[in-house]
View 1 (tube, helix red, strand yellow):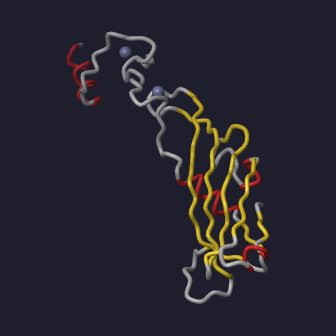
View 2 (cartoon, helix red, strand yellow):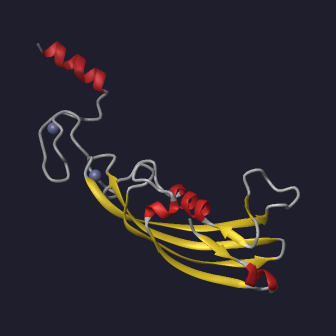
Length: 167
Ligand SMILES: [Zn+2]
Ligand SMILES: [Zn+2]
């Protein structure tokens, strides 16, 4: 849980508190299933008094273990997230249901950081932009080897039919 005391910055109109953390994934309630982070998560940012709200502005950086969606190779990549969130007093009127709130001068930014980092994670990652993937016929990694399989963008069902006709 990452909690910040904001009693001081609330007293000043332009009050701002800066912070810098090296966090274990579990401090953000992140399990390896959520995001397989390698090492610690770097967080740097500030919480500022924005009048009715507190403004969180943070940059996060983490190394994440990924698997290439084309060649299935495991690799590590740095992921970066920028978080801009508002925190409202818990008794504020007319705020959205899922808005972040705080109480008693303590702001818990755990969820905002966690969600921010998960949000930038791509659904499918590539080991490199032009990864050539695996041959759908023999399974060879086309980045390191080549084969003579016929894979000219043929529909796999058509390819199966062609194999049958050959016999
Ligand atoms: Zn790849
Ligand atoms: Zn092949």
